[in-house]
Length: 64
Image 1 (cartoon, rainbow, N blue to C red):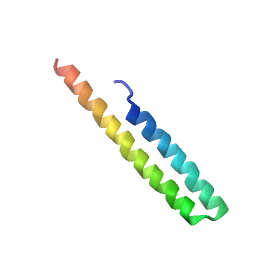
Image 2 (tube, rainbow, N blue to C red):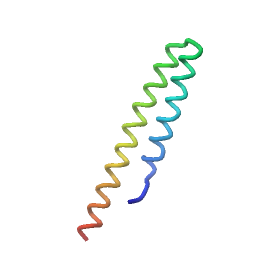
Image 3 (cartoon, one colour):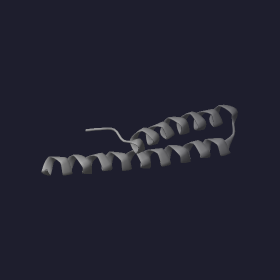
């Protein structure tokens, strides 16, 4: 099973969002925390989409 762009970018967004949310918590900036959490959610969705794409590709390869 390979790795695609959506998987990599999605997981990078999760990490970035986690860091942003933590920074917001440390400095007491609620809007920064919310922005970080939103980025995490978008990243998880993108990574999941990439996982599904890879699953479909593998399934198609297996049937060939």
